Each structure stands twice: as structure tokens, then as C-alpha cells.
Image (cartoon, rainbow, N blue to C red; front, side, top):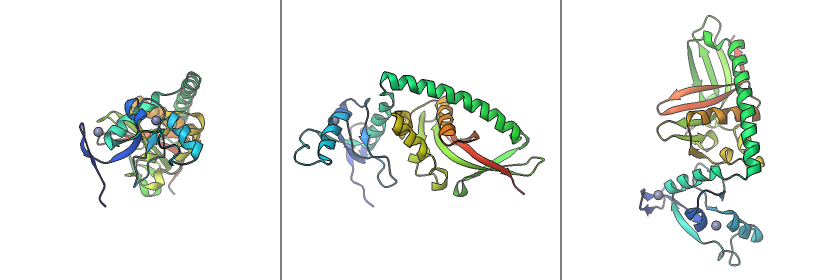
Length: 244
Ligand SMILES: [Zn+2]
Ligand SMILES: [Zn+2]
């Protein structure tokens, strides 16, 4: 497969998407675009004003295409741009978000403590995860191995200081990133951009925050974080049983 490229002054030869000039100039506003797909990671995007013109016609045609000035944006600039849109919440939504997040972080702490005790997680000396069947297996303890059914929430890169939702991460196998779509749907329903933007600037605690929300939306019993070469994978535990 050959992909067309443009030459970005910052990033050199890069793949690109069609993006309205408003977003290119002021990226910190809602982006109207489809979600990343494996063969189309950077979807064409436009702003709220352009979207109104789009929705009036239900498509881009000769009646509305004059209203949106579309430019080409390199895929790296695209990722940096859409990442800035996570801050665009109105006051009411922002208030609701902070409150919700705060509550869920407390719930996570409580559930985590309960799960660790009940499953005696600290008695095991090792863990291994298997993406192909979405399992996290604890072993090396006095009791039988513990098999947990997990969903990956996302990855926190300490190299780039970014959070990436597992639903946008096509290097992960499908079994660990299918149920997480419910969290994105929830974000869409409530206009919480941190839940619907694929990747954004983040610190470690953001990983726990997103995991706390996934815990709630997916009705999970607890969470687990494992280290990777350049950060962490955050997962939620949906159920667990001793291997017999
Ligand atoms: Zn626009
Ligand atoms: Zn660029």
C-alpha cells in the first residue's frame, strides 16, 4: 500500500488529513470527525461552524463546500492539534466532569482495596497477560493461579507524556479493546472530550483517572497497571477466578 504524503515544515514527509482552516489555526475547540480506524487513523475533520454547514446539506456539495476552507494537515500536526481539543468544555460540563471524576477516583480506591484483599493479589509473585483471550494471570503464590478477565483501558507513555485510549491503539489485539468502546460512547453522550479524543498530553495520574471512569462504565471490580518499555498499560478487571 502506498500512502500519499505532504511535506510538513516541522515533521517532513508525512501522511495527512483534510482539515478545515479554523481547526488548523485554532485547534483548541471541538473537532468534528470520525474515530480512528486501522486503515484510516487520521479522519478528515472540521469545526462546529463548518459542521453546521455540513449538517444542513447532509454532505459536502456545491451548496456548502464554499463555506469550509479545507486545508491539508500533516498527521503529526493533526495529532498535536486534536489533542488540544480536550480542554474545550463549557463551564457546566467542566463542573460535572470534575465532580464525576472525583467520585469515581474514590470508588476506584475503595474497590481496589477490596479486590486486592479478597483475591489476595499480594500473595502472588508474578503476573502475565494474554491479549488473545484478554486474561491477566497471577501465579507463584501458595494458592492456585488466579485468572482475571481484563479489558485494556489505555496506555500512558512516559516517553511522550501522552495517554492513548486502547480503542485507538491498533497495535493491541481486539479482545482487550472491544468493551472499552462503551467508555467512548459514554464520553460522547456527556460531551467529555477526554473520553473521545484518541491521544492527549497526560501524566501518570491521568491514567488512573481514565481507568476510574472505565471501572464505572464497565462495572469492573478493580484495576491493574503493568509497566511497558516506555510507560504503563492500564486495565480493568471484570471478573476473576482461581484456576482449578
Ligand atoms: Zn471550520
Ligand atoms: Zn506536521
